[in-house]
Image 1 (cartoon, rainbow, N blue to C red):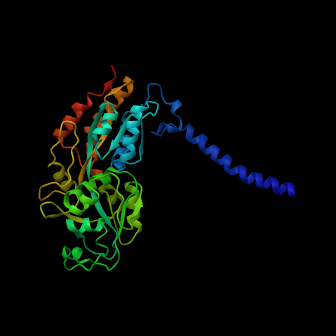
Image 2 (spheres, helix red, strand yellow):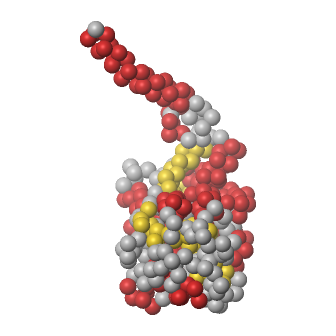
Image 3 (cartoon, rainbow, N blue to C red):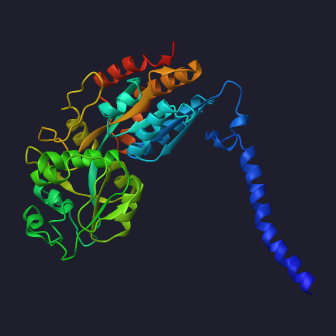
Amino acid sequence: MAGYRSLRIQFRVLLPAVACALILVLVGCSTTSPDPSAAETKLPPGSTVLIGAGATFPSVLYNRWFTVYHDTHPNTYIRYAAVGSGEGVRRFVAAHLRPEEKIDFGASDAAMSDAELTQTNNDTLMLPVTAGCVVLAYNLPTLKTDLKLTRRAYAGILLGEIKNWNDPLIAQSNPGVKLPNISIVTVVREDSSGTTSAFTRNLDSINDKWHSRFGAASFVDWPGNAMRAKGNEGVAGLVEKSVGSIGYVGFEFARRLGLDTAILENKEAQFVKASEQSCSAALATADIPENFRAFIPDPIGPNSYPIVTLSWILLRKGHQDPQTAAALRDFFTWCLQDGQRYAPQLGYVQIPAPLAEKALAALNTVSASR
């Protein structure tokens, strides 16, 4: 009997392992997935694998690009880790210092600093490929109308000075609205983030106290009892689950979850809701330099949404492998041309045509090292 029980226990232990092994065999044999990580050694001859890492802000659009591009270019496989802008820049710089840490492109919503560019021997191209708005998503189920927030109000909320939803400063811009008498809970990023950089650049521009205490940064030691989450998806998910919360996220993440987003006061004292039109209006006010490192912390214009950012791909200008250089040029040329039509469908902003033309010209400088 003891032998029978022992055999039965062994069977129960072995059965899941056998099942898992069978699943792994089946997955490894699949040839339909554009992700080469399961069995890169079995890729068709002449295939190219491009490896990238960085911003979560544009990851929804990037994933669409990767899928659509692979459908028409089946020999190009693209692997991207949405680890945040700060980590994306770190990995990109590390790959220059230690070539064995293979990464073919980085992605960031916070443009690289002069110090970071120096670490790459100034062999870096910051290529703007999309743009978008940062919104304040909130969870107030009893509110039956859109919430308006002045510049003083949303800065005060993030500073931890405005603690309750029926605060007079919030009520002032929402006349006739019954605001709930509940505490405000802010939801913020715990990782180094380009979304944080874009949001704090706006706060830095509009609020003296924020400017003196925190400034513009990719990582902030947030005041108060803020809830922290990793990535745009993490912040959006926490807001969705937490009544009384408000958090800053990329517009596309709030839209995907159906979150309410605040109508914000802009520089012209107009209340503007995030949309393709209002974000494009803000982007159009930017003066873009030759290196494409442009920030738009407080855009002018009555129709401009106040928090907008470019999003950059980081590329080495010189590559040891000509095939990799050609694949990067081809893919990002497609992104700046045909791929732009997917941006508004997913809550992003198309790069203006004159800027796209300049970016394409710069992209052509990416080549094999001589």
